[in-house]
Length: 297
Ligand SMILES: Nc1ncnc2c1ncn2[C@@H]1O[C@H](COP(=O)(O)OP(=O)(O)OP(=O)(O)O)[C@@H](O)[C@H]1O
Image (cartoon, rainbow, N blue to C red):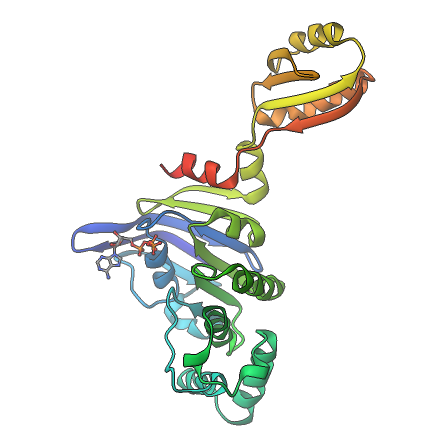
């Protein structure tokens, strides 16, 4: 378990991360979401002990993060490789730097090259790799020492749709066995992978919520229903319900505005218990990007 408590970091008098507290349970996959400059990279760098917090603590299973570096794999925002090395040699090089050697290292290199789908390209120079391949090599580097925690800074940015899909596939496999925190400013990316979102704005976490709850609470409170039967009678009934703000005919059905999006469950229960012959129950949902903009602006 990772525990971040009251962490603050200031650069030249300007706070980048302000009193952030956050806990990650084992095998959780958390998306740290926020616009440029929100403090995501700074928080992640403190989490992997590349930079030190001014105040606050970061503990892994009760031990300071500085003492647990072997438990963490990190993919920075712009992973850098020596372009003249082959993919395989780049991994051997970084494995050596992290203390792996000999047959253990060779075995792990073979394993991770297969895991990230670069085995067939292992003898190619990194300078000839595509952006997606480099990102996969970055992930291979991050998981080489078999860490329990993965800290990934914008792992999906700057990838074309194919590269993005490949990386999502790899991360989906990795999250079965590792705890992952990844940053992104693209909510759709986080939505594909993470069960939990932490929204960052101006150095603070302004929302910490499960992805299901986040979508639910930000869902629309307008429902469109179509049914066979007497529209007037149904309208009269709906208007009486305490959680319904309004109900009005619209095209071939009825538009119902609820007090809260969550009341859609009650609405459906009422419609079914009244044996109304429904053939459409449609929630008009904001896009994830709309929700994100509403939250962070
Ligand atoms: N080494 C540094 N020196 C000075 N200021 C810094 C440094 N690193 C980050 N900052 C500042 O801290 C703030 C947070 O930056 P950070 O990179 O953590 O944000 P971010 O959410 O990761 O943004 P992005 O998505 O653009 O990477 C910004 O105002 C940034 O300019």
